[in-house]
Length: 477
Image (cartoon, rainbow, N blue to C red; front, side, top):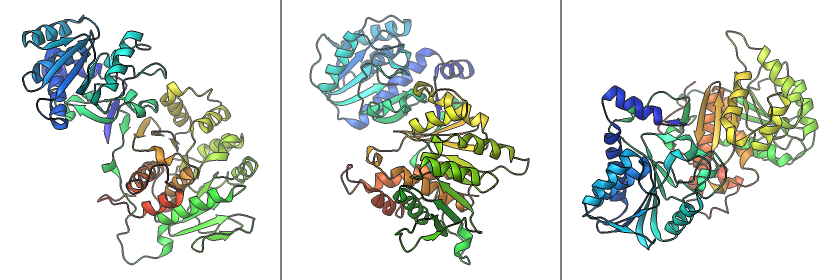
């Protein structure tokens, strides 16, 4: 799990003040980190084009050119004349090395984008966009210094497409936006003369990694099915969604799984069906294919319950969701807080915010919207689905960047609900259930697509892949 920051300017300043470093030392270390990455990706003598802007990001490029000169065939393309003092200094030093400056983008092995970085306001100028676009087309490997030029909070304009992005000091939040998924490539962190422990401070924004995966491993041997919980899944208009969730929960450790439906359904033999909530239920899942009217009625019926629950899909389109959440908020005491996990996609989250009198949803201010919800309902865990999954609990945000496009298929979200519901039923808390359910979901998809085309993944394949996940870590209650 890594710390994420909206900006690292204050961290650079802190590094200089606390550890007696200078901006020049930070720039030299940035260039050193880029050099190390390039050494790991290509052979000596490779042709490397470095695109330099006018600010300190451009200065990183000039410093990199100086360090690589002699071992590689280096070309510098000045996108803009040096302006910042550090950039001018790095430019003058590079000139002393006799590095070749070019006026035309030519084919090369590696292109390094050191044009703008994190200082961009708005969109790139047309000339810079055209240069970067041409560079993308003429290089075997594309590397971005800090962040790809053009990437910003605004969801518009040209963005340099990197195979690797080397974030300086720490990862920036903008690199984990949904749009960034198509542009950042592999994310790496470049050390600036300090370890992460010394450079970073605690952040309420975290990025999940595959190494964070912990599974509901069974340790004790003298056990029975009741020791691993009973998940009750409400099934409605589109019964397949609820059945998928139920199967998912059974694959992820729940001891018992029951479907609650008034219809006579064809269901797998290993899942039970009942018309009412079983007396030994330990968690509830509802919303998946349920239908809005059904969702409203069931939410009303469950208001007095204290059982943990996961809410999805149709529950976000009924005003009853606010009554349900308000009631559960009032149930809180010093010794008890009902675990509620909500898993909307953006349009469902927009409806949820309106029902809860929290205004309109602005995708550019996703974190603000999520925190306004979890501050109003601090007992809930919010899982906002997307290309990257954002998970909020109270004041903290966790981002899972491991999702892949193979998951963009009907039923994938139902599988996720089942995974999270299984952990809730087994007695894990809401945040751990959301984090580990999301990680298992995305890592299982990655594992499955090692053997099939990414367009071919089905929910049933995803379920099978979940059974093969491995981790040395175990979720603790």
